[in-house]
Picture 1 (cartoon, rainbow, N blue to C red):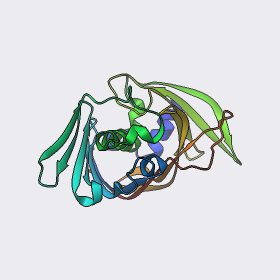
Picture 2: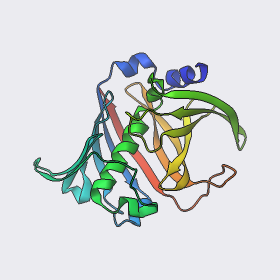
Picture 3: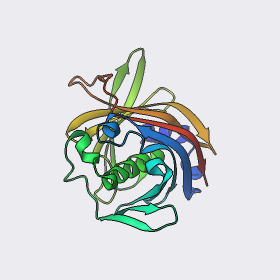
Picture 4: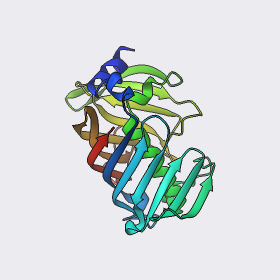
Amino acid sequence: MALLDDVIDANGGMARWNSLKGFTLHLSVGGTLFSSAGHAREFKDVTAEGSTRTQSIRFTGITGGEHSGSFQPDAITIESLDGEVLRTWRNPSFASAEAGSAALADELHLVFFCGVAIWNYLTTPFLLADPDVVVEELTPWRESTQTWRRLRAQFPPRLVTLAPEQIFYFDESALQRRTDHDLFGMKVAHSSWAHDSFGGIVVPTLRRAQTLRPDGTVIVKPVLMDVEIFDAVFE
């Protein structure tokens, strides 16, 4: 698909991506989903180490630097800094998640949510080229004075995502600017900007999730989720 090819090229190219095995991020995550659930500072100033090839990510420095949390599709764990497993959630799923902040009240659910979100953020748009992901170009979206092209993606059950169907928006430079999907009973948009290149891979360093009006425009407040990436290393 021409649009997806342009987007992948603008973000570093498939050849560069396929040469990689993993990434390390320094980031902070917050927003009302976190603060309302009692986790306002849970993911502030943490390190995330993940695989570019399988759904796997480990956060170090959560809960004020006292613990680490790991996401894999079949298990979520919380560990002490010396590696002792403190809690485990096997076969995690969003299927039973409650609406709003209640969905993240348990720390294991929080690690699951952040693991899925951050891994998908870092692997998009390359993830959209997976042969089992069905993509379709939609009509363009007018954002102020800009025209953003859109792709609808339907993800297979084997990939854990925040929603099985998502709509991705790309600006005139083929950089990702927004993603729409359902989340905890809400229609949300994840805006992304401040793109930077790390080892040849272009990453939006700022992201913000907000709810949507029926006409597709973004409601400014509340900010459900804020992500700031301070540094990224791909290898």
